[in-house]
Image (cartoon, rainbow, N blue to C red; front, side, top):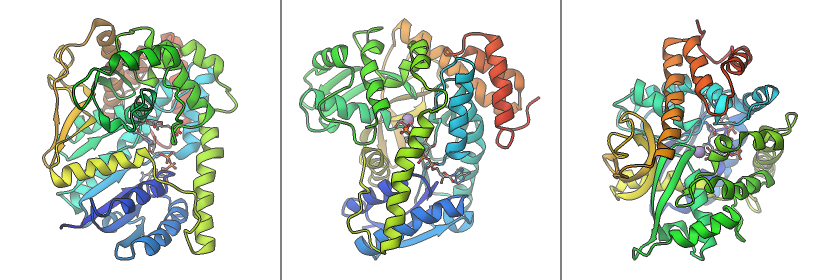
Length: 441
Ligand code: NAD
Ligand code: G6P
Ligand code: MN
């Protein structure tokens, strides 16, 4: 059986230990020869890598482990890159969230002005990683979690159309786990879903069990009463702010009771409510720095200090399982059905062919085969036309270094109330992102 070599780009990510634990748990299904961590912040990666080295030594000493900031070492002789970089780290996420709030606008990691600013930072470095992979391991696959996935996906489509890149998001599967629990199923894998949208901007319109029985009526009823709040809590999305997002899905669903929505639509449908609920001095970035980052780095440091991973509270999560399922589907041509962000190309028949849409695909060794989702209703189509134009304009602005196009993108974002606010926001975001964005004119 072939053994695979994997590079985790963004080795210092808070999600790296979860992915490594997931890989270790699945060695019988997906054998591994080598795991390499790559980051451009040696010190940050050092803590995570120090702990992972000990984990591997204890659980799978046969796997070769490499920690590096050298691209050639990182990207040579590998089969997969699993990328989850955060360009500008949490310090810049905090600005993405706080600057819009100063203007009375939603401040969010991937939606609206914050997501646009983050997109302008992510495009260059993600393309750089793809180029490293193609230079040193031309047959490898690039599995990307790096956000904002919608803009990154459009950028990879536009700039590297022939590269082996798959963009994914864990929000739909996280929500599907909650749906499954709400109707008494033990796993999302007991459901087969039909879904369409853009990343962080989509709807389920058909959900069945493996025998073909329609599960939608029960799921719709639950969501219309409780949103995605269930007795079983999500492990990854467990903070109070996530719980409030899951509850708000009830009001999001009210716009089209025949479907059930992605939670991220709350930022587009209820921006006034979101701003009211936000604390401009303490946003999600602060919560994550005080929560997940402290926890993960604290646990890693403990492993290093004790020189053993025994008793660690670090654990596998759904987020990690999805990227491993994807790698397996490619490696073994399993034709597993998964939601991916792919070029529309007719799958949504009445929508822009070149849009990067999130839809079910069958995944095999040749990559994804998108499944036809047919025609979508006018309400969703109208929203998606506007949002996809924002995403495409951001990529055009980055390619052409165009201030004008970025102003258009911000003005078109449903979350931004006027061209005046868009311009004020653009000027503040540009100033804060001088070290990361191309120089605009
Ligand atoms: P994090 O800041 O803990 O980790 C990101 C790492 O990337 C850092 O160690 C940083 O030094 C590194 N990095 C930044 N720029 C780099 C570059 N140019 N080259 C190499 N490394 C670089 O962030 P996190 O909270 O763990 O999240 C990581 C990423 O995963 C983010 O983009 C986040 O939005 C994304 N994410 C996506 C999904 C999804 O659904 N697609 C889900 C969860 C997380
Ligand atoms: C979900 C989304 C990701 C996003 C993450 C933020 O998982 O799918 O795209 O990055 O939430 O979570 P956080 O805990 O960092 O706010
Ligand atoms: Mn996501």
